[in-house]
Length: 122
Image 1 (cartoon, rainbow, N blue to C red):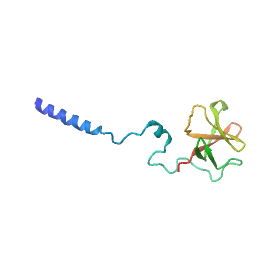
Image 2 (image 1 turned 45 degrees about the vertical axis):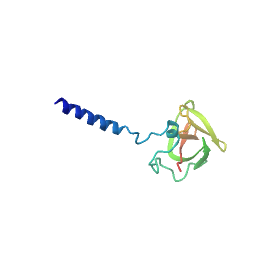
Image 3 (image 1 turned 90 degrees about the vertical axis):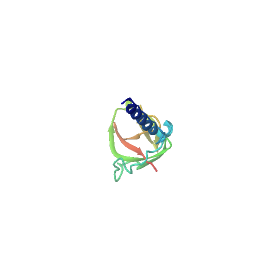
Image 4 (image 1 turned 135 degrees about the horizontal axis):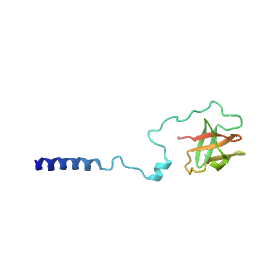
């Protein structure tokens, strides 16, 4: 009986060790933070047919990336935002707790209301 138990333990240990062969190989944290996931979902946000008056459809080059407007609006206090750049004469913000690479950018659409821009993955 002990021999069967020992063989069973050895088989389970061998199977466990075979599962720890490094596949799939984890990627470094910095690379994981800045590269798109695979497979990439085509569209994760609704995109309006036309941006609201005065807002650009796309914002190129903020934080080294290109951004496109979504149909999402945020009503947040200015204290929850910090500057991330500008497009023309309009300031571009991100949430105060966000750090590059940003999840989203916010551009003032009306007093206290911000249009959301998401990164375009190409």
